[in-house]
Length: 477
Image (cartoon, helix red, strand yellow):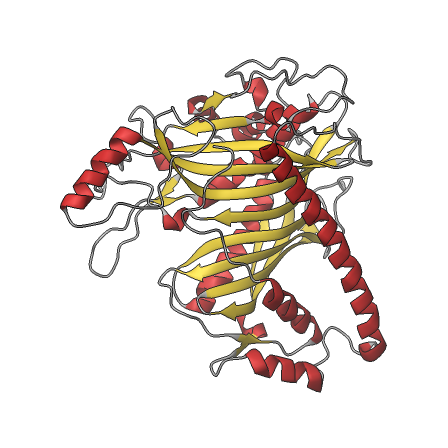
């Protein structure tokens, strides 16, 4: 039996504490992916009593009106959330198990859905508009810095894992433009102070220092929790007409204190800086075309470009083309969103899947995702469609690898073309991903051999990021 293409959005006419109407995107998407029971176990918090309906839709809203939080009670023995959001410990050659690992893909999926819910809370509902993920400005992952469990792992292959740490996902609109808004999301571990103190004493007795990166922060210092930031993302959501053909005006944002103003100003300055950089790149591209207009993307490097690469390449440099890998996937009905196309969280996971494959193959060892940035959602991905995932190492320095990944359409199995769907061969999503080796060992550098590869190499070399430090503090939790 053919499943319906579109998912109904949950009712947003009433904003009731703990109601699923707070999650018009997370609720239907989770349900169609067979994770409806997981949603029932999440505790929904609305920290602010600010009226989210706000009366006139053109009236500015304070950022606090969109603030929401999901609490993941992983430490509770009454549910299976821990198994859902973790991966089995890795076994080393000495037969010792590492700590539980976060299921980063599930957290990324939740973050994308939750970003839409937070944006929906700001605009006041979806009666006359739609929301789409337009851009992922940046997603920082610090999970590998912090263990998910401070309890000894249970013995036996079939033993149920346990933890004393919960997770919290917080989100808030921090900037609004004409038809788009930026949603800041943070994932934190939450450890009761009393439990943290017990662990601190036990570790001091054994001669091990307590994790100094644990801090208590946030707006509720009396909630008896220590928190660690393990992930942060900046999603750009866009408002569209119901048929997704035109942009719609977004409700303005009115910061009400210095903290909110600083977040707003940070995004505004970054947006203006990106516009200036784009203009400079266009000017530089026009200037370069005067000198290399006879060159195609597949042509070899010029002598000047070759000299630039020689100054940065290591003795063990490999051709960039030798790092290329690809995968073929078919989009599924259970990956659909409320508009009938593949939801953004799944597209992001496609990018991390090929990115991890490329990084692991190049490094010859397990690698950790450090950061995604400048993820562009170019076109909708239709259902029952074959997509090609492609990636290669664009630049490598020490243990860090900058991977360029793309998702493009191969063919369509469906009988009718979906409005807004890309033509076969067209890009759906493009990514820049940064990985680091699990051991911290350096990897071989790469060198370009074509004009297209040189553009990727130059861009990656100029912007390879350093992630936030392990002890970075959250601003929402």
